[in-house]
Each structure stands twice: as C-alpha cells, then as structure tokens.
Length: 118
Image (cartoon, rainbow, N blue to C red; front, side):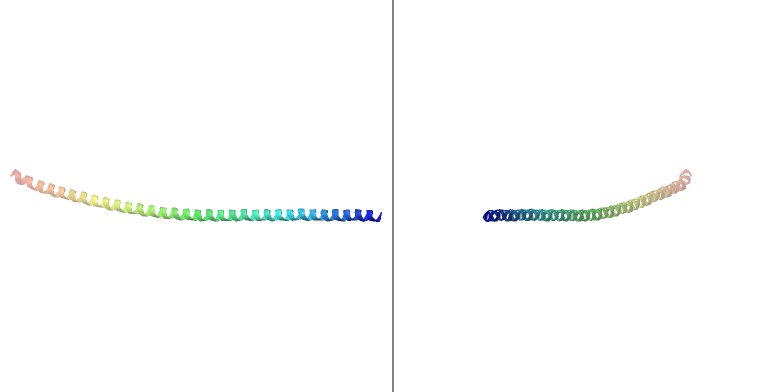
C-alpha cells in the first residue's frame, strides 16, 4: 500500500510539474506574441511617420516649385509688358514723325499753290 501511494504521489507530482511547465510554455508564447505585436505596431508607426515626413517634404518641394514658377511667370509677364509698352511708344513716335512730315509737306504745298497760280 505504501509503495502504491508513493507511486500515485509520484504520478501526481509529475503531472503537476507537467501542468506547470505547460502553463509556463503558454505564458512564454503569449509574452512573445505580445512582444511581436508591439514590435509590429512600432514598425507600422515608424513607417507612417516616415511616410508623413516624406509627404510634408514633397508638399514643401511642390510649394517652392510653384512659388518659383509664379515668380518666373511674373518676371516674364512684366518683361513682355515693358517691351510691349516700348514698342507702342516707338510706334507712336514714328506715327507722330510721319504726321509732322505730312503736316510740313501740306504746309509747303499750300505755300506753293499761290506761287504756282501766279
């Protein structure tokens, strides 16, 4: 009977050790799974941070490019307007010179007419 109760006690002790070892194994698995989950969350957060940083840099680059483009367009427009104004002034000067020559010519003609009649 004593040997039988020792055998049963030994089986119970072994079963308890196995139960504890299984609990520890499960707890370790859960701990590792939690660590992996946290590491994955951190990896995703880092990727999102980098993506946001790249978007911000791209937006700044585009804004600078747009500003540079507008500045260049304004410069070209002002140059065109300046050249156009110069051409108009030049044309007005030529028109005035032609009108003055015609006027002098007409004055000469009207001065010659009486001379020619006489």
